[in-house]
Every structure is written in structure tokens, then in C-alpha cells.
Image 1 (cartoon, rainbow, N blue to C red):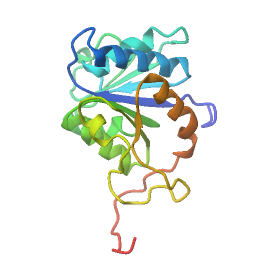
Image 2 (spheres, one colour):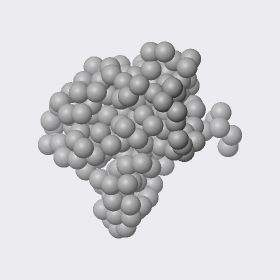
Image 3 (tube, one colour):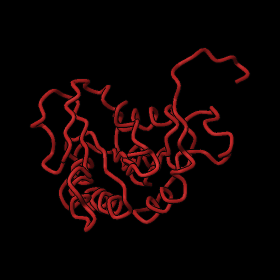
Image 4 (tube, rainbow, N blue to C red):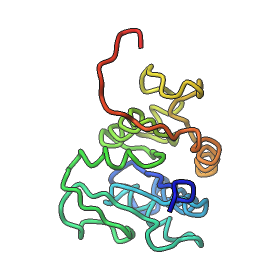
Length: 195
């Protein structure tokens, strides 16, 4: 399959625990379903909270197909994945697995703590499209801001963490912008102060 026909994976990150039926649980499930409806795959850290809600929502889509939910686990045991993950990747990397999740084609953050912020920062470094839902947690705090002053895309002067009010904003931003965010990170290198 060539790159033009590959279905893109969108990482959904956020709170590691959300009560069933809570606003973040419902929102993450809606976003997961809408991502698959729009032709994307859903990638998460494979555990509970927003990760599980997004995978559950993805599987409720009429367009769902096996393989549409991917979980990159922090540990070695594949049975730790939530029951809605199709493709389980037990990384054994603990928190470093956030770097793998951040390599998805785009990242959507829903709330979250330090782990979520690390994924947002890594996605920023890796030049990914980042959408942050304006809810309590790191996603709400960084929505509509730049993580730092580096120029990731000279042809995208408005580049930032794009804030979203809800599911329709997330899908609209993805549809409008994901094809502009295709550059690849080429590793850490020394930068002159003028860069």
C-alpha cells in the first residue's frame, strides 16, 4: 500500500482515568467514533481512561473494521490492554512509549496530566498536527498556543496547538489541516542561536 492510500492514525491521549458516563468519557468515545467515521484509525496508549473511551467509541462506528484501534502499552504484558484495542503493541518502554504514540499522523488531547503533556510536547517536536480539546487538564491549558518558538512549518505561519471545542471541531481541524503536517523530524542536532 502506498502512502497516498494508507489510512492515517490519530493518537487520542488524555486522562488515564475517567468515570463511566462522565463528560470526558462521553467526549473521548464520540471523538473515537468520529475519527473512524472520517476514515482514520485510532492510536492510544492502550490502557484506561480517555484511551479506553476513544477505542470503545471507535468500535461503535459503522465504518469500523478490525485493526482500527491500536494500543502502545507501556509494559510487556499484552493482557493489560483495554478490551477495545485490536492491535496491541506491548512496548516495555514505560513512559517512553509516549514517544511512539506521539509519532501518529496527528494527536488529539483530551484533558490529561504530565503523561499527556509529554505526548503533546513530543508531537510538537515531531512536527505533528496537534489538536487540544478545551477541557480541564493540559489540553485546555495549551489549546491555541505554541509549545515553543521553533518554526516547524514555514508555510504554516498560524502553526500552534489548535484548540477545539468538541468533536466537530476536532474532525474539521483534522480534515482541513492534516495534509499540511507531513514533515518528518530528522533527529536532535545543534542549533545556532539565530535558527
